[in-house]
Amino acid sequence: AAGVIQSPRHLIKEKRETATLKCYPIPRHDTVYWYQQGPGQDPQFLISFYEKMQSDKGSIPDRFSAQQFSDYHSELNMSSLELGDSALYFCASSRRTGGRSPLHFGNGTRLTVT
Amino acid sequence: GNSVTQMEGPVTLSEEAFLTINCTYTATGYPSLFWYVQYPGEGLQLLLKATKADDKGSNKGFEATYRKETTSFHLEKGSVQVSDSAVYFCAAITQGGSEKLVFGKGMKLTVNP
Image (cartoon, rainbow over all chains, first blue to last red; front, side, top):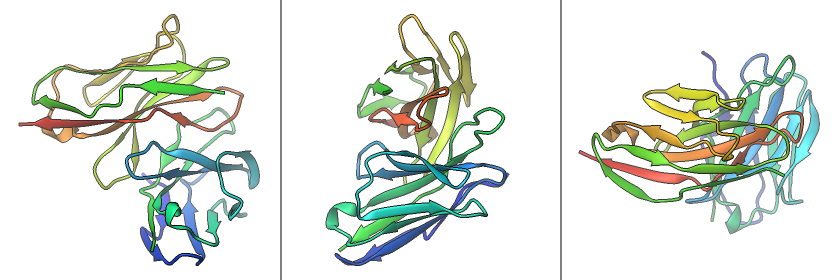
């Protein structure tokens, strides 16, 4: 079965640079979520989109922005990167219309800021 | 908002030992409850779920029962294997409310042969 695809798997950036993470949800899933997981931490919710509109916002810094496109893929844009942004970034998708399906997570993008 | 509290570990068990990981939740309304597992270097995988009181989720020998009276969703396995070594997260999402999934702190399990 198709899963959530995230790219790239690994990304190394320097402080103050920008990064773009991409997420391709499971086909027919209409909701995308972004989570940040620091080393040894639980995943923290950043932001979610339903039918291309932002549906909820968590602890996402103002330096970050995200959007969901017409094909339902989503991108997380991160600017002015800081060392503390080094983490594993997960995207998850679900289908909300017609009854909620569980969230299915991608394998994540490991961002290292040096 | 929702919150989830779970045993944090780390926990080390011998193969074939019994496993229990406690999880309790606080939520407005009636949440759906999940256990996710994260193997080393991998993403989060849904292990099992329950959407209403008294539901029992099960998968790969793991079980958890949604207990509304104790607001709990404890994970159990009768006989763990080395391959069960991973981090286990309890999570909750509320029907009709905020759609974000809230995680517990996670518990790292190591199973030795």
